[in-house]
Structures are given as structure tokens and as C-alpha cells.
Amino acid sequence: MRVVEIFNSIQGEGAYTGYAASFVRLAGCNLRCHWCDTKQSWHLSDGYELATIEIADRCRRRIVIITGGEPLLHDLSPLVTILHDRGQRVHLETNGTLPLPDGINLNWVTVSPKFLSGYTLKPQKIDEVKLVMDEHVNDRLIAHLLKNYSLVYLQPESMNPQSISRCLEYIDKYPELKLSLQIHKILNIK
Image (tube, rainbow, N blue to C red):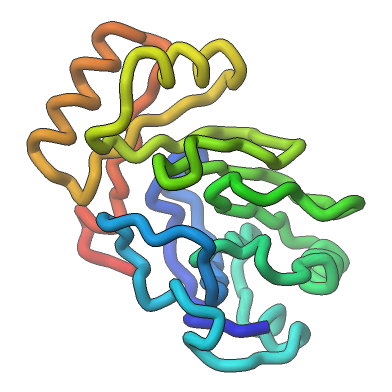
């Protein structure tokens, strides 16, 4: 697989905020969001080739988060199997444009739908939705997400003050929404 980086830190977003985790950032993305904070992972040629066992060996935490770019551009099944065999939990962060492979056993799926995809959500299993607050977010979209998913987070775009204000306005209007602040950025850690 083409790997951009593997590192150990804490989950900074969503329901598992604060948990120790290993992160596997894979190369390649089928979207090009202007506010993306991982543009170094956009191209399948980014990063370096690494054998599945080598990736697994670098994941030292009980929770392993596979992210990207868009990790579903890769065959994740061998890596997920190895990690589960070692007793690790496997979380996936996806933009939601691709379905999960048949038979893949993920412990947690975070979908972060984007305007460029029409906010499409194709995975069969979605544990949480993380919506980056940009100019395209509206009442209709939020009402749809809340109707269909039990855990919906709003995340300010790059900690932009206007985006934070919009998040707070929507949370006031829809109290079942939750705020995700990317605490790893606030703490200035990876």
C-alpha cells in the first residue's frame, strides 16, 4: 500500500477524542477539498510503498485509525485482518463516496461527507458522521443527517472563527448535534 505516514498520537476528533491511537494515512483521494489539511495525501503516487505486515508492525496502540486521502481506494482487508488478529481495534475515516468492501470487519466507521461528492454516503456501516462546516452546509443537509444517523458532529473549517460561529448556531438550533474541535491541533500535536 502507498503510505503517507504512520504515527502514534491521540484521536483528536469525534466520539473517540482523547483515546490513544495509531494512525495510518494512505495515499490517494478522489476529492480535492480546498480546505483539506492533508493535501500531501491526494495523489496515489504520494508517500511510499510499504508491505502490509510492516504497516501493522508500526501500529503500537490498541486503536488503529486508517485514514487518508481516501483509504477505501486501497484493499484494506489484509491489514484489517492482521490488526484484528493482534487484538487491535480498527477504525476507518472515509469521505463516504465508496462502499465498504464485502466482509471487511471494522470496529468504527467515521464518514466525513463533502460538498464535492454531493454529500454522498455509500458505506453500509456508519458509526458517526463528521461534517466540516463550510459554506455549503445548510438546514436541509443537517436535518437529513440527523434523521438518518444517531451521531453527527459539526467541525469548524480550519478553526476559522466564522465557521466556529456557524457550528454554534446550528448546534443551538439542533441540540442533538455535537461539536468536534480537532483537539490535536489545539494542543499542537500530530
